[in-house]
Amino acid sequence: MLDERKRLVLRAIIDSYVETAEPVGSRTIARKHDLGVSPATIRNEMADLEETGYLEQPHVSAGRIPSDKGYRFYVDSLMEPHTFAKTEVEKIEKQLLDPQLTPERALHAAARLLALLTDSVSLVVAPSTDQLVFKHIQLVSLEPNSILVTLVLHPMIVKNRLIRTEQEYSPEEVADISEALNKKLKGITYRQLGMTVLREIISDFGEIGRVLVELVLQGLAEEKEEQIYATGASNILTKPEFRDVQRAAALLEALEEKDVLMNVMSSTAKSSGVQVVIGQENVYAPMQTCSIVTCTYYVGSDVVGALGVLGPTRMDYSKMVAAVDLVARTVSLLLTKHDR
Image (cartoon, rainbow, N blue to C red; front, top):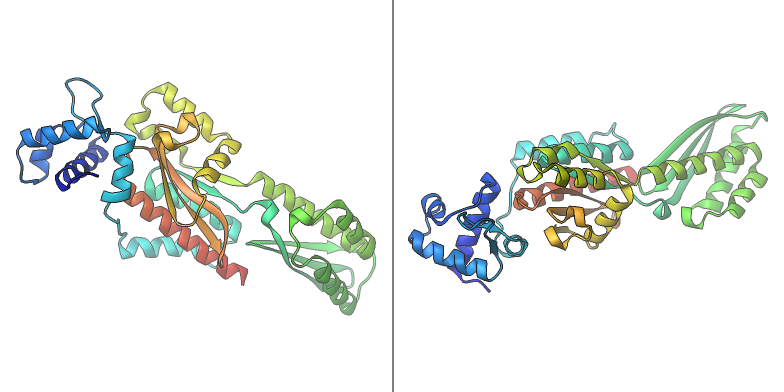
């Protein structure tokens, strides 16, 4: 455990390094931070912090920079909470709580907003197809040969299709079919929806059943293609850490691999609340020069996905944590409203 003076020195070094991206010396700390001790004393404390693994010295004559261990201690024990201004919060809520925004579009908007807010790469994982549950199916007769099909899946998926039928159906017949479909499908998941059930739907409900199966299969295909959104990759190129072309190229290539991103997110967002994974704690080598801040989001009390940001280990952790938490809470509020 670090004593109070070492805590102050470590925090000052991290704050300065995050701001400047330059190794920090004792004189800089003495000049910029009123710690009440001389540069020589600060130098001794820095040497102790380096010896115990909290700091690193990239060059013999240079100052120190934080290690992954130093950042971890900072996040766990030293970091002050970041508070967004009321106007910033209102702006975020206005963009994400727009009643005209569908849940799918809301996730894309959240990804863009998070990348802009943090100047980092944002990652948003959509609910897994296997988790989607049939909540409600509604058929509405518009004309004898025209029926509006609405398919509601929990969480947050709504699909509509206007179908033309060869057979004429009365409003009463359409209502009866709608009720029968709800009894058959309500509460089951996509995982439980096998070919046997699909064949039964076509057999029992004829051309209406066939259109419904097409809609369901189309939904499966679309959701599988859109499990994760990565936005703001170009932000990485503005960071001094990625002036090295090979390092930047390796990271950008990793960001193109959806399987890699899904694995990274699933390994970080394992529990509720904001999680911070720093440097070498990352499971994927090209991302071990980065940190990832993630948070799960909800529909009601059910965890349905995760979102987060990825950037160099030299990041403003306090702001990142606050931004990810705020966007996750706002997305949860929106999706819960849609699901009612």
